[in-house]
Structures are given as C-alpha cells and as structure tokens.
Length: 312
Image (cartoon, rainbow, N blue to C red; front, side):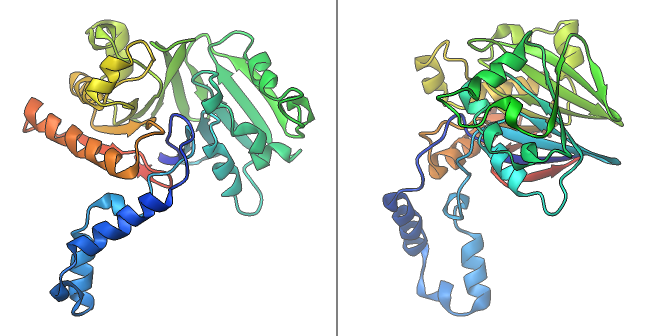
C-alpha cells in the first residue's frame, strides 16, 4: 500500500511572500559560520543541522490523498481538493483506466480540484465516486454549474458512477469502511484494510470525548491502525478559541492516537495561516507532548507534506 499526499491544507494559503523567502534565507545565513563553508563535507554537515522548515515548503494545495494497493492498478483517491490537479498532472502517458474517489464531505476546499483533474477529460477513463451522503451526485454537479464553471459535470468525457455507501464495501482487494465525524455539515472518516494493514483518513473532525470512548464501534474502526491521517489544524489555544469550527488541535490528535494505539500519526489539514516555520514547530511540540504522555511510546508522528509518500 502506497499513500501519496497531493494536498494537505484546509484552504488555500497565500503563496510564499518575499518576506517569508527572506526569513528562510536569513535563517540559513544566521546559522552559518566560516568553518561551516570550508569544504563539501562541512557544508553538508551544516545543511543537515538546519531547521527543516527552511527547505522548500509544506505545500499550499487543499486535501487530496491517493492510495495505491499492491497488485491493483486502480488508485483510491480521498477528496478532490486542489491537490487533485497535481495528481492528475502527475500521470505520465496513459492514466489508469479507473479511479475510485471517496469523498469525506462537500465543503469547497475538498471539491475545488475536480474540475481541473485531467483524467476526467479522457473518455477512456472511469471514475467511481463514493459517499455516505444521499444525493451527493447533485452536490458535486452543483459545484460545476454556470456561472461558477464553464464546464459542467456531465460535459466531462470520463465515465462516472456514483455509489451511496451504506455499509463496508470492497474495492479490488481492499475493504473500505467509514465512520461519521463531528464536523459542521457532517463528514466521514474512511479506513482501508488490506492484508492486515490499516490506513485511516480522518480529516475535518473536531474530536470530542465520544471519539475517545472505548466502545465497540470506535475500537473496531480506530484501534491498532498502522497509519492514521488526522485533522490537527490548530494549537490547543486556537482550538479553544474556535470551538465548534470543526477542527482539532495537534495535542488532541496525539491523545487520540495514543488512546487507540495507532502506530503512525500524520498531522493533516493545516491552517492556511500557518507558515512552514509554525507547522514544524507544531510537529516538534506534538512530539514533545507525546514524550510527556508516554516517554516509551512507539508512536511515530509526521507532518503531512505535498509529495510525501508512506509505504505500508
């Protein structure tokens, strides 16, 4: 199972400003000493010691994650944020014959990439959409009506099917299950299970005590997941200030992962106002918080970045 990250934000941030670029350059210069630049070995050692946020950027596209299952050449795609354009543009030569698109919910930042998904304009491609929301074909087509879009959903040549999820299903060799999340307008988490490996996509959730309750429903869905992508948009103070906005803090995400013995937590759905420096500071804070909770924990914590891949 290969998990690839095409969009990781909650809504589109501004591009890197000249000031932010200057901050990255200034950080490099501030750390440099003459002996750090003496030869190739010292320069390499110097670069390895710099804070990670100075190298490139976490990315500015909204939510889209793809999963490739071993021996199955039909990608599973979670959400249609602006990162979906990057996914479509990455396909070299002939695209896969079929995509399976699972929609967590229908807020704009999770749909806005679909009109720009190049494979949708190929009549040889099939796209299967899945959601537990009744009538969701109309929700998606409503995004692409005049005067908002010059292209309507029915004008896109790819063959499209819409599947209402009412129970767990199989897509190829993988089993897909889903669970309702606490988010304005409703949202759903998805779980892929395949040959003993489990990946959870749980973006856009404001975690509550219900999510920590050790009942059969929670345990069967969350417990012992190998990788869980979890909404961690805010610091704890921001989450308190934005109560009922539908998103969680990184500290709540860590507690959630610890509760359900998740092996690898991926911090996801970054606030558009959080620059790279702040996001990496949140990652370090999450790791320090984990040590406070359980110094011997084997939980791995990663910051979602565009272009990142995780192999299960």
